[in-house]
Length: 502
Ligand SMILES: [Zn+2]
Image (cartoon, rainbow, N blue to C red; front, side, top):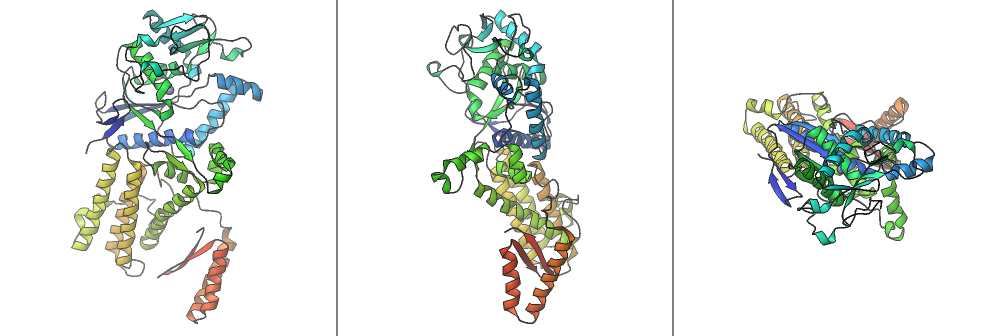
């Protein structure tokens, strides 16, 4: 099976062949740390964390870099509003962002270089571009001359005439062409000293685009494999990175350009009459989202859609996806009840037990399970189609449950078949791990501790007695009134359990 990646540059899926055999370098544009992050800032890291997991699974040694933009006009303005220094603001926002990524299972980032710590590399790159006559000094600013790159616009597939200066530009000195963009910005009067860096052109600070060229070059080399970011970065940011890097190094820059689609916020019908509701969802910080919803759910929502499609984000979507997650949790609990072992502990998977099958029933189940695995891997090989891969995981959950139903595993004593169901669940978990899901048991909701548990057992026993005595009005009353307060009873051949939620 071979991996294909949709390359924004060629606008088609291409066979993935790394620049250096066995190794992959990935650069993802990170956040500008001036305000608390929102879900949009987590989407790219969740997707590329999954990309790294999958490439590592395929045997590549992967290095993944995400930059932190900690010098920018927005930081200067916000620090002024908050009455703190730019580094204080950047440190605070960065630290809460890192905490959120950790909760979301984004563990694969190798380095998060900061712009403020790479001024030397940035200045050196500007100097080289000036020497090559691809950049020029104007006042205390340095601009890239877009006419120096004859192929400018090839990533965004724009022709010269629709090029406009990026919205992040500040008019400094005069520009030669309207599309020229700042590599270096002269310090303005009144700006705090901590963002004024020395350069051959006087005090100032780097433009936004050049930091990514300088840092990707430093950590991944002049030519590397995958450059990622949101679709909104294609122009001008990524176009400008290409122009700077390729003109400076006279070498190809990134081989594959992967762009994730943006997040769409929808709320219930009321949102039409109340646009504020929609805005509220979009405005929720990552921290407040994580305090309302489990991190696993947020990761699951992101990965349930292929990264090139928009991610729908709404209360209904979160509710629906939570139900989806419950299907996995319930299967894991069922396996534990039947075998006495939690699927969260390691155990043999289908690949390890398939040679021990003894009859058609076992064979059909085991090879059916391995077929799900192949289909999952094919979906991932098809431009990391996590949406399709998640769909296959659901089919697998259904198949394992059906096998357990068919062989009455709760009551019949069939250790061999139960061990096959457990092995299939281990294979399932192995695939989920590639998506960064179900790495540990979900935090148990606070159900009130031992007293509540004891009282629930009394109610369950009362209901069982009522049913035994055919007092169905009473047994239904117990069930319905519990449901009214959000407690659901689940009857199984081996007894009744309860859970909170729908
Ligand atoms: Zn960037």
